[in-house]
Image (cartoon, rainbow, N blue to C red; front, side, top):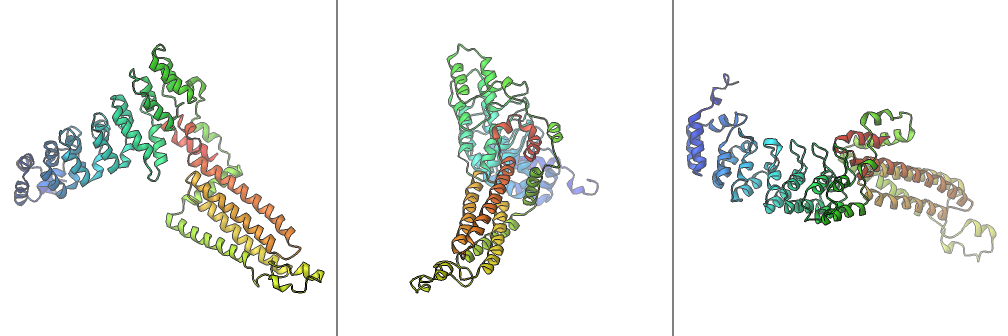
Length: 472
């Protein structure tokens, strides 16, 4: 490529001039070099791994030069040098945190840059006592807590292995207090993440000799970590504790905590089926499974905008049909309509105050079409509701009661001799709704969080197994 772009040939003299400008925090020297050679920064950026002027400024804590060079060449912030370090990695070695905070303000993604061994700046601050920077990193870039090293270690693993319990408290405190979208899934995933040896942070914590901080184990238990997860050796946290010195009071406390939380030994925890074993059990003729799959495929194929439009239409239809039931065509008989002192039996039976003025046949036609419209719109709302666990059911149960109230209103407003038909239809339609709700509950609960502890017991590597199991 260089033969077609001779201006990108690396120039050592230009590089040395820019290096000196960075060390002296001189933006004037930077622009003087650019005036002489406009492609100076382009040549440096063309090298895959290089110690850029931003690396130099970050390591030396030169905030002014670092800000200016970042503005001119933002890609330098994400570039690694020959030692596998980004400017942010080097900035953390500086005793003054000013340059670190400036880089985070310029681009929060610098927190997620993976250097040597896959270590991100978040991992690095989890290894020492820079808890303020750790909290600021989590606030600026919440997604960084999900990053793992080449050893498949999260920041929590790193903090525990380095004995940084203050950092672990910050990480756990952030996980437990995070209220952003998907926070519950992130908490479950990070707490139960396994390193290359299959160890969760609980395995590592109870395996250490220092049990002075029992609060961490309590926090993990209350945080709904999977107590029965097995590592690559088939051991649970309880197994590790049992292998320790049982005369140690702290070890006994740890074991009692785990037993009190119903933790099990590895021999008592059934092994999760493999993906192949799960796929073999798939039955394409299972109507319940096929219904759930069809519903979920339909839902997954909808964009958010389309789903919102359909929900609005379904709600409008449900509202309109319900209003039509309360105010049927032609209205209802008023109490003044029967002003003959109820002397006629026919009058008392056919002109009951509050009932529809329509005859039986007309009311049945109105009831049939109106009921179908409400039922279809209610089912559409059930299908289109986003699967957010208990909150979805919090909305769908009142919707079921709304449908029941609709048919009850029809039984009250309907003319004589229709109450029996309406009540009979109520039983059938309510049965359909309850059955459909149960099917949806099974499908959504399976796909989005059913038995999280059991699902995570086989480790993060069996994600596809759990998805297929959810569809069985």
